[in-house]
Amino acid sequence: MSWLTRDGLAASLAVGVAVTWGLGWPGLALLAAFFLSGSLLTRWASGTGGRRNARQVLANGGIAAAAALAGSWPAAAGAIAAATADTWATEIGSFSPVAPRLVTTWERVTRGASGGITALGTAGGVAGAVAIAALAFAVEPRGVAPGSAVLVGAGFAGMAADSLLGATLQGLYECPACGARSERRDTVCHAPVRLIRGRRWLDNDGVNLTATLVGAAVAALGARFSS
Ligand SMILES: [Zn+2]
Image 1: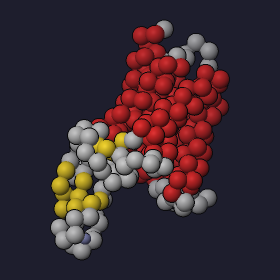
Image 2 (image 1 turned 180 degrees about the horizontal axis):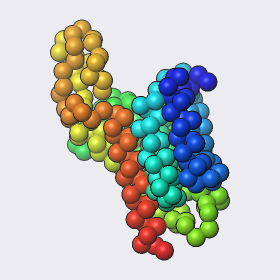
Image 3 (image 1 turned 90 degrees about the vertical axis):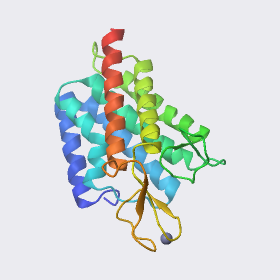
């Protein structure tokens, strides 16, 4: 499996077992749709795609696993909708003919910069949420279903939270010599990078974890108030 590191594979299996244990094959179907579509899109968009480690896997799937173990189909489905929307937005947005703009200040930023959004990427993210909502509608257990609109909303909310946090609280670093920017604090370019925005304790994995938590919360609340 070239999509995952060894510990990433172990984490993926743990998430898969937790989701299946808690929600059965419908939960596993949603998780598999996220994982396969995300991996394929990453291959397609970036050519190679990095191998995901355990931290990255748990940042995307940990909330879904916890929600499944707690027996909440809406929260798990909402977390998966958010993770899918986020991944599709990033990968499809990489094909945007226009440069992304920062979601907060609307200034132009480089491709792939956290907090940067494009119309194409946003449409891709909504498509990802719609895909998960459609699959959920087809497989979800009777009587516990959040409406499809709730799941699309959960996916969109997670994607929006990801962009907002990426533009504000997520740590952003810069090389003091050449000005090259990085989201990784351990980068050494010409010299060790220094923090220029956000917080040291919030990296991309923390942002993804928060975004999936937002998706889970929106879907759980939406399911409660719409039933
Ligand atoms: Zn440099």
